[in-house]
Image (cartoon, rainbow, N blue to C red; front, side, top):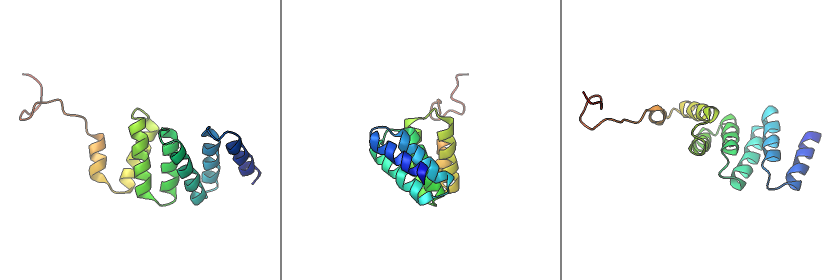
Length: 125
């Protein structure tokens, strides 16, 4: 409880800094208190909607709490903000597989076609 109290004091002292909130969500996740982790992550995501790390944290809390559709949405937004982040992509793909969104999963991994419609390879021969 002391750790949570200290983190909450830090959140109050620095309301524009997401770090204490992320720490608090992490403490709740370590304690497997998924409801509290999900609540804190939702508060952070509302306050910092363009922070991919917060959205990733929110997705992990949602997934652990059984909110698979919410997790897919959070991971998707995180991936849109940080498309080069391998951990975020991994979490997004795992959530899609968990939710059985196989068509979205396949579309996410498909390489863009550089060929001309009607050709078999898109390369000049």
